Length: 467
View (cartoon, rainbow, N blue to C red):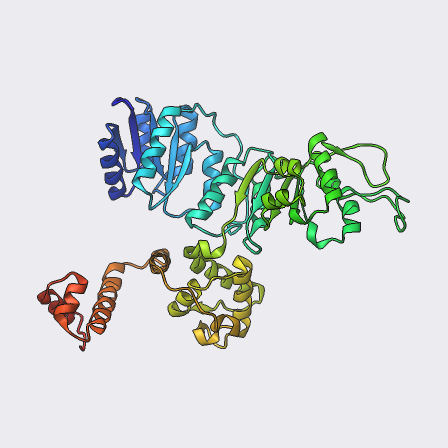
């Protein structure tokens, strides 16, 4: 990478600017930092960088609006968007606006450097995104875990596409929500989204359900009926549990995907299938192909783009925010006040495996909204199947995600002086646990904590610990 490569950084957080500037300078890159979007745009009138790295939440002009201005003035300059508050709407807005990539804070420096090198090497000339962000339900998909960011990126990258998509993941992970999001952020968004669960319809009715039938096609067919392919004309057809489709219908579906036309049951005239197909499964289709229960050619037709939705246990850091979200929604549905999850109860929930995934968590929040006797939810209030469960051992990620959620919640409430509240509590726990481990022997406890004995004594006195 040549020394002339010039990177512009805009972020109202001075520490982020410093970290980026230092890391990029070590890579022999020229950096120019701005604390707001207006300053960057003024400089863009006089000079053009090779790459722009921008925060998304800034006073005045935000990152999405800045991206729009950049693409109008210098559409060839790649832009990397950063945010500490990732959500689907912003990801899609960024990609539709022409962002090269979307990066969640806190980010790994090596990952960022590799991304910068790829962006400069490719230096794509991207036309300004003409598609405006459409109004969607802001809580369409909730989550900020790394695994969910990959899902958001896929939806964003596919926002201008009509490609067939295969959505995989365990039951209850939210595969249909992903399919709906793919539809809402596609060129077909103004047309219908039709969903059908292949496993829920009797085998002898499924063909008619999908393709429709002519009058008299079979006993009971007293009138012509349009199937789901016709109903979804111009829009999107979501085929859930595609792995349960009978072999003969797999053949018919393959033909539709190959030719773009189909026949109603009992019909003789082809009907155009102007439909985007999104399929979903909780099964391993590759294994079914190997066993001969699923057509390999159909699998490849469906598996053009694959989006995997992670299990809830693989995105534990999202459990607190999902719990809060579902408690609020349950309260609205039931016309009651939202319950408050106590920290110790939330910590217990974070450690559960949730085999039913997000659906199980949502149903639990409905149950607890009705059944918890008070406003605050204690561990004793949990349903027997959860209260008696053996939670996984806490991990580093558990306490970090709980702390992160606590910080975000209090910042959003406008609280100040967070460090002054949390640091004494943090040190108190460390000291108490270390002393318990050593049977009260302060010298040994100080060694465990990496302190000197005098430091430990001073901390105990300062915290007014009765030890």
